[in-house]
Image: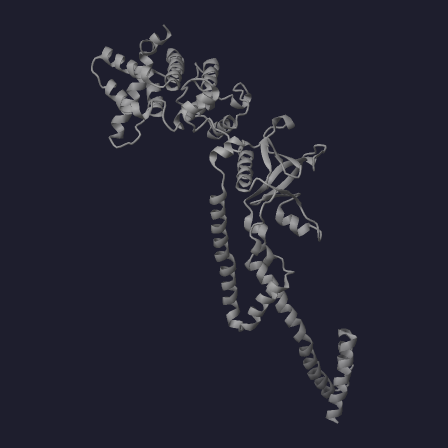
Length: 475
C-alpha cells in the first residue's frame, strides 16, 4: 500500500512540476493523510534538488562573469583621470556649426576621451536606459585653446576634435577651470597627433567584453576545477595576475614606445604644440623673441605699479593672492592679451608678486652667475667711490638684456623710494626684497647668511647710487 502511494505521488509530483510551482503547492495542500504528505514531501525534495542542479551551473557561469568584472574593472574606470561639473556647450558637429546652448554637465576625463553626463557618472549609469551611451569626445588629435571671443562668459576654452566637433567648457571659478585645462591638455599631449591612435589596454578591453566566450570559458573552467576552499585564492591570483602584472607590462611597453617615437622639443615647437614661455625662460631668449632688450611683461608690470601703486603701503613687500598670481602667470605664458587695468588685477600686490615671480623663475638670475663673485668683491671695498666705480664697471660688462632690464627695474625702484613716506618702503627694505631675488650664487657652498648680506647691500647700492652707476649710459 505504501509503495503504490509513493509511486502515485511521484507521478503526480512530476506532472505537477511540469504544470508549474503553483500546481505542486496545490497537490501538497490536498494530501489526505499524514503518510501521503510525508511521501509527497520526500518526492518533492528529490525533484527540487534535480531541478536546481541546472541553475547552479548557470549561476556559477554568471558568477564567473561578475567576478571578472570585479577583478578587472571596465577600461573607463581604470583610466579615469579627472571628473566634475563644468558648463558645456557644443558649437559644431562634424564641422557643421550649431547654436550655442550652455548646460551643466558631469565631465569624466580618461586617458584618451571625455564623456559628458547630465549628472554624476554613478547616478547616470544607474538611470541610463539600456543601450544608451553618454556623449563622448575622442582626444586623439584634438586641439585645446582658450576662447574668449567665443563667449561673453569668462574662463572659456574650446576643444576641437579631428572629426570636426567643437565644444566649449567653462567655470566661473578660476582655479577649477585652469586645473581642467591643464588636465585635458596633458591628456591630449600624451596621445599621438594623427588619427591612427592605437587602442590602449587591448587585453583588458577584451576581458571586459563578457561576450568573448573563449575568455569566459577559460576563467570559468579554472574556477570549476578548483575546490571551494581554493576559489578565494584563485580570485586573488586572478586579480593580481590580470591587473597588477599586466598593467605594469603595458605601462613599460607604452613608455618604451613613447620614448622611441617621441618628437624632439624643436619639432614640437615648430609645429606650435609647445610654445616658448615667458616665465621660466632665459632672459636673453625672451628678449630675442620680442626683439627687445627688456621683456615686455617687465615693462607692463612697472607701468601698472607706477600708475596706481607708488603710494600703496608695503608695495613689493606685501604678498598678493597666490592663486591670482598663478592665473596671471598662466595667461602670460599662453601669450594671451594682457590688460593689467582689468578688474581681476585690481590688487596691485598681484602685479608686484607676478613681477617678483618672473625674476625668481629665471634659470639664471638677472645678475648672471659668472658675475656674482665679482659683484661681491666690489661691494666689499671700503671706499665708497671705489665701490661705486667697481659696480658701474661690472654693469657695463653685462649682456645687453641683463644691463637694460636692470636699469629699467632699478630706475623704477628709485621712484618707490621717493615715495617712502607714503608706501613705507625704504632703500633697505627694497634691498631685502630684491637682493636674494636678483642675485644668487650658482652653487651655495659658502655661508648663505653672509651671501644674503652682500646680496642686500648690492641691491641697496644700485638704488642709492643709481644715477652714478647708470647715468653715463645716456650721454
